[in-house]
Length: 95
Image 1 (cartoon, rainbow, N blue to C red):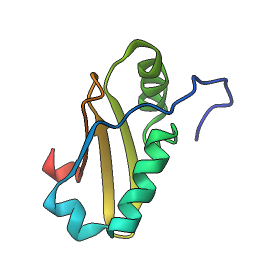
Image 2 (image 1 turned 180 degrees about the vertical axis):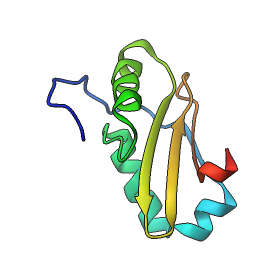
Image 3 (image 1 turned 120 degrees about the vertical axis):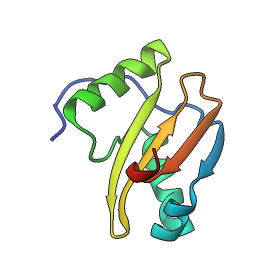
Image 4 (image 1 turned 135 degrees about the vertical axis):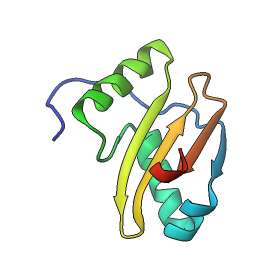
């Protein structure tokens, strides 16, 4: 459950976007695009409250960003590198 606080505006650059074979098998391209839009908008999905707080802080200090989404095909992670050069969609088992 997300806390009710003021968080920094998201809208960060995703950089080069990639997806692992597991994600491409688990989620449609349209579904992946939706997850990427949510991630870029600062909707961290189903990550822990600690990870959500870390993401909110990362928007200010330029650290790595992690979103977690539960989909019909399984859990999908989106990780954006600290330098915002790349975002990768992967399954937890592929980490």
